[in-house]
Length: 416
Image (cartoon, rainbow, N blue to C red; front, side, top):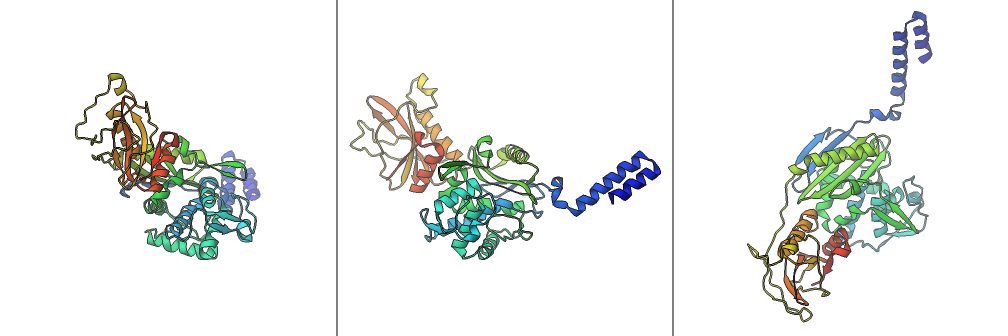
């Protein structure tokens, strides 16, 4: 075709006709090989309020797209469902079949016959986006990947994802595996809502395997303020994709972008959409209650009185009032007789700083602290009056997960 058009161009001896002939030739080639045209991938996006599900921004939200490795969010959903039902634990072992081991990269390069733990599987699915691990999970839960894909689709319908069909557990290309960004946002909200004790796994930035440290493909964990992670993905047919969850100031956003022309463009788009819409999201306010504190034997001179009031009196010095970091922490482990777990976020020389710390953590990690209550006990240690920043009313998993997210050097999980 190109030869004929170029010949016609020479015959009329017209430069403009020649340019048009070349352009027509290129268009003909692209019509034969559409997947080679990167620019042909259309971008779709949506931003929803994580607390309410309200749509704050959308572009082609209901257009059919290939989910790529965002598929693994549903694979993880069903894996967490097995754990919630008590059929699996983090230490449960899953066998690697020859089929699973043969899956193309990205992968852990598992060997047929070896076994991996559920904990390793979760890490590998999120950090490495391992296709071989996705098949291991599918075969362990459903017997085969085909059966697992049918279970994925049924769960999608139950979650309101009516425009989604799954054909495999990994997101590797299959013409019948389709979704929309609206459905993907529903999936992200559902997995955070239904498995709050495991919300910390989405922020995993690296993992250790066979003596090597593997880093996440999700660079938004470092670039986006308040990012708590989720999942990235790519196949040629869909472009570069991401589900990004952000918590900031008591607000939560779920941003989905599919069809980026590069990982950097995808990240820039997700960041811009998040920054544009974060102030429009609903705020989940922290709760503050008065809780009497018992007097344990290992705390000298503890007042034992409720220290949170409607108008607390700050007796700290002007220097102490300006401090925003813990200035002192006693060696005591806990004063907790409530029957629930709590976390201690530091000890401060004034009430205002301690309260501010508890409020900030509760707003920034709203999913983990939804059932928590801020408690600010006043104690005297070695002649110093201190105020402890605490969040009470947690279960063990939430308390430990919160400290892992905040940083264990700045957080103590306290058992009842």
